Length: 220
Image (cartoon, rainbow, N blue to C red; front, side):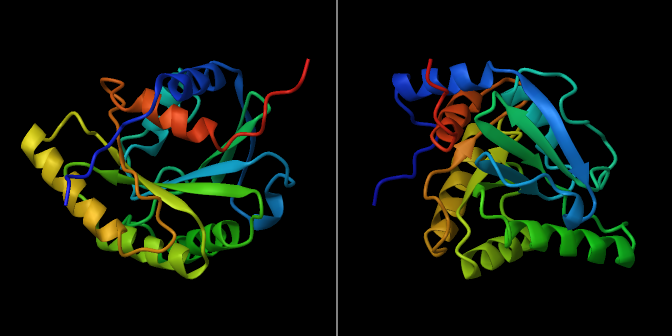
């Protein structure tokens, strides 16, 4: 069995991703209630992961912005679903982090209800990006989310964040271990993207993959 490979895309796909993410990206709506979400329209890609995994940092890096999504060193700061329109072709959705131990039970229950209502009731949801810290690999909260996505046949893909921090051998071992687990999940995309918001590693490859999910550019 060959070793799993990550971050492999061809030049044309990479250029398509670059062009898409060079477009204007603007905030559309943020809501803590399912009733407040924007109407269905563009294909949507949701970014999910444990609190402080680096969702906001990755969104900022993908879109070449510094403050598109608020970055905080305080876990659990994102408490609503935030929608961003990318060039009129793709909606990026920043989700509340899960696994924040200090959140109140009421907050956790409310966030979980919102997340489930969105993930399992949004027909425009094209893919969920499950962000996982490259230093630690999959955690119970990640596995729980993946199991629920499998049960509802919601397509998802794992992206490792902070990929510049582990040593190369440690990172390769984590990629192999995560790939082994993903092979057992029916709704999981088999390719793993290794990213770093600090160095930009893996960002062109992730853009290329997300560009394939976007609506076609308007005809001229």
